[in-house]
Length: 400
Image (cartoon, rainbow, N blue to C red; front, top):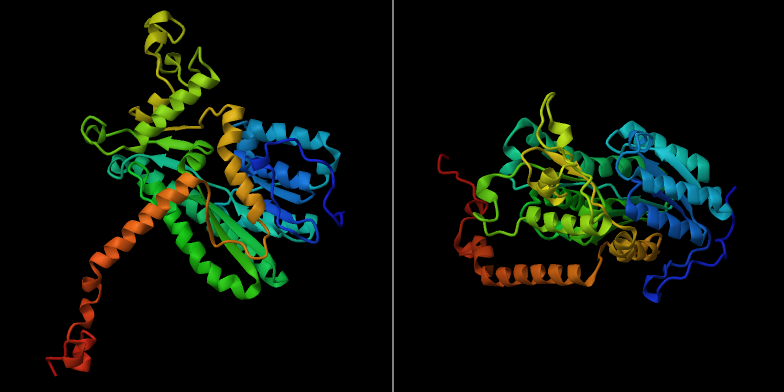
């Protein structure tokens, strides 16, 4: 049974700037989070459960059962829920692969059956593919990654939004939030497919917002910093081409940026070893070459960052220590609690001062270019008064 008012239990002690900020509401809200195992989803779920809200967390069964990816963090969260009585009856976990429309419809139906409605839906699914556009055309495998990134970052979000719209429209209430990034504004070398998938979902959401507004269903795009989305989700890299290596190409490709970040994180998490690669994995029977446990092999053993430059396609999760993870996602989680379910939420919210500054500079450049070429923009109106009306429409009727 749903309680009639949020729990009044005290919140854990946190720095003032990170205290959750919730918009006023008359009753507990029901949140539907599409990728419940992500760090942002888990942190947000903890906040809203403590506040007295309800949470439906969508989880891919194969990822959870096989303990792949970020499943362990979610298991820890579930154990905390079991031990916290005020949370126990207000969490429902549903199987969900948003790439499958049938699973989306089933998950939404289960959420409504459990808690009666869905007030706020958070689309939190995102993955990054690192590689220059030309590098993604090297093989059938790299070409397939383009389809995969759009399946996850675009179509998965579209599927779950379409599945949830009927119930929100019928109730004439609801709020859909999609997490993208400032890469929805800014193209980034080495993240071309990732950026384009985010531009695509933002265009979809901007258009949808007008269509659903008459039903009192709101739409918000939350743009987190690039590091937040990339480092808290799966990263896939493709083999580099020599022409795009740093020595040949001066552009600061994402590969070099994130390789350095991964190496720093790896040293923080496990300074004495690199458990993400083993020479033993590639040895053939009878091969007596040094293994990853020998001194010679350890000296040359690749770091996690090196995997982004290997000659094979690699997928990995950044080794984020708990303190680093909490600090990285804090602003985004704070924004989500303050925006989610608001009577008048922003259509687009940029998280973090650095992101705001970067987008402002981009918009300033666009504005300056528009002024510089405004005469070109108005060229279609040149001598409009002296032209035949049909010629003004660009129609060639000389054959008449």
